[in-house]
Amino acid sequence: MSAQPAGQKLYEGKAKILYTTDDPNILLTRFKDDATAFNAQKRGSIIGKGEMNCAISTHLFQMLEGQGVKTHFIDRPSANEMRVKSVQIVPLEVVVRNIAAGSLCQQTGIELGTVLPQPLVEFYYKNDALGDPLLTPDRLLLMALATPAQVSYLQTMALQINRILTDFFDHCGITLVDFKLEFGLMPDGTLLLADEISPDTCRLWNQAETDPDRRVMDKDRFRRDLGAVEDAYRQVLERVLAQSVQL
Ligand code: TMP
Image (cartoon, rainbow, N blue to C red; front, side, top):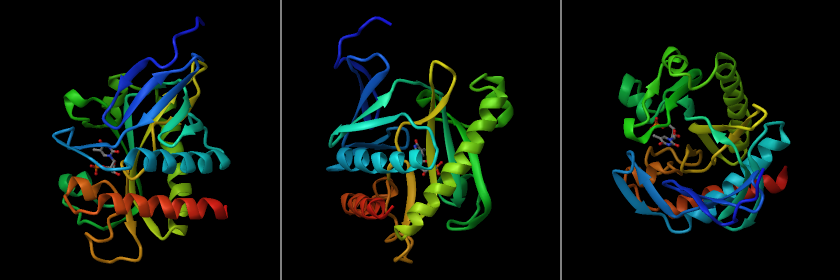
């Protein structure tokens, strides 16, 4: 593969910017403080979010790698930057839910906080113009977004990652309510866990709080104007760091 100039902006998303490096197989992700919700209809900034999410994602990716989950993570050269393997992102948001919240409650009427009998894995089409719609398995295959074997692999990986993360967060005194994953394809066809795992992409409830608003430690504080967003992210980071040291 031919060399490419390093430091070229490849893509700017809502929460991260992707740059080339001098190695065509490696990209640099810069985590931003920018926050958006409801398909960017709501915009704001969470001070220190870039560094906190980069640190939290780093620890979670390292912990998952240690348990046999292949991820795109390489290292964290600075506080808000992560070097990752260059992958072709599969345009699916894989959501795992343990407890009913968010769009599951809105679309089904299931009461907030209902513990699901088993984890629910859902696939959403990663497409801002269409508003990231929920896909049926048949629609996913119809659109050729993944092969049947890949869908089955993604489902298995999502459940395995859920088991590891649920256990980890439990040791942090945090309940993992639900979360979103993205995966990327390597040139050899291997699927790697990609993107980030952070309070932007998970619902995390503080087990020390019972009040439905006070317990929220994730981006719902921003989405729902609950206040103290930075404090909540900082709490998650501190607990993840403390727990990572003990592993
Ligand atoms: P939902 O209940 O709004 O469908 O969200 C489910 C989970 O996915 C929740 O943990 C937040 C996360 N999520 C993202 O990471 N990005 C998104 O764009 C959306 C809508 C949800």
